[in-house]
Image (tube, rainbow, N blue to C red; front, side):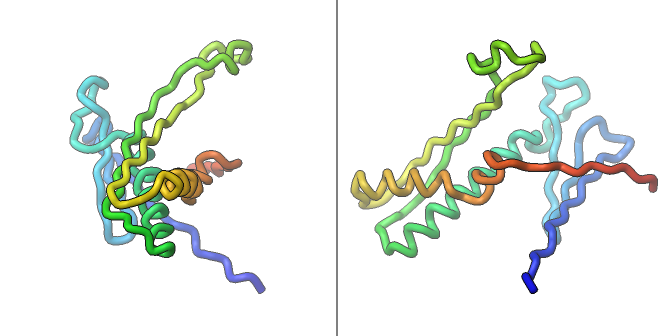
Length: 150
């Protein structure tokens, strides 16, 4: 019989006395999310949800790159990643049914410090696209939603 992994569980709480400031809990780790002050009610006390999305992709990417370089015993010193997110109408969506359709674009710039050849750098770039979060974001995904009372 196949051994299935337990699903990850994250709890998010937005109390009634807060406009957007939410507490996110993953195991013993607690983080804060908020909207910037440019959003009415936002107090900028934490990253916004898209910041967390980019941080998730970024942390997975640098970990995957480092894991690969270690396994190959390459002279990788530091790994940095700069990510940018924006939404824009794309030529592919000019004829979409909804006028508001937008394509989300994430730009990733991998910055490597170490004595590596161009071939090794290109391989690390390729590997950076294979981190599990990257594959999840580009793959087919279902989100099953429900509601309950407390």
